Length: 448
Image (cartoon, rainbow, N blue to C red; front, side, top):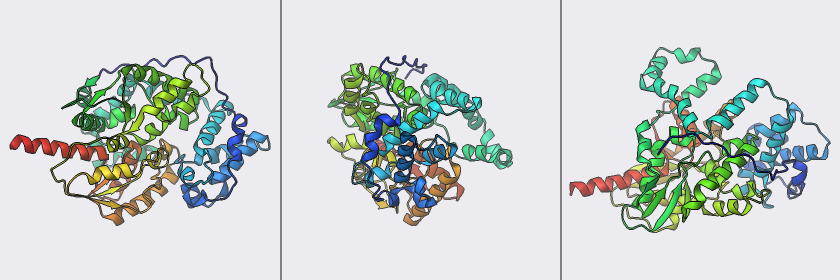
């Protein structure tokens, strides 16, 4: 697939009102019953009411009423939230908590005064790098050189990374081996079904996903084509906007959504496939995101209606049988935005059970956040580490050969936790295991 920069379209003249006052009715759905408290990771860890969903709703409502100002304390509690949406699963009243937090953060970023360095960094990441495949590839080039020339190994052997500030040490430790750039060549704009074509689907390749996890995109395309899908990968697709909206950059997220709708809607697709949990949750909410925009309102809802997580889609179609055994004890971790954001829980497990030889084991608190949460492990490393340690404790108890999870942030976070403790457990996306099984079948057929 051709690497090229994406020109973000100009903002529509239909402007959203992101003021919390305009969404006041959503506050009223919360009756402060407290059923969300046991489901909230930050409340469970800290025991602070203002770090619970109902506590944050109380803060947001007080701000909307004008009873409190946008103080540093207010901002702290709103951003301490993981936005994991576990509270939405627990809430019997259907409170749209994730939407409220995202609107609150958007208002914060519009009204608070931030240092020029922070403004520059946010603009670089959210508006320049993530939306552009070309810019992102250039940003990853130093990391590729760092790994390709063996500099990372030398730095670790000599202990040079210990000279870095603690925050940079933690970020460096999370860098996985980057896949070969040549892998991108396997992702064509149109990839025909390997047998009879039954479906025509679009594939969202993502931004960071396509740099750090190209192999997962390739595995996704392989499994789809193996199961009768013609795969379409529009070159003009861009970042889904999830990281932007979680960080208060709502207008940028809207522009990215419009770009993706334009890129995919003319392709005559049966479904739009995504293999990243956080991206999938965002893509399925384009209708809500652009509901204020007359030019895109219906188009956004139509787009979101076609979005399917890869596990969700495969579970709905007749799949080619796998005959080769892969003997492994596999523990599945529920990514927050897959389990809570999209209610996709059983489908990944059922797909893993299709692989002969796989012993699927459950881990404790499987749908409890691992602490990744987009860029939360960078902005809130202390809390993220606490949650990661909790997750690794449960993983160790399950004694798996492989940990499987459907979100790139979770893959990085759990992999980091395992490395820190010197635990050698493979961590994969479920689609990688399926692809491995189909490849084993193909190899066996060649031998015969």
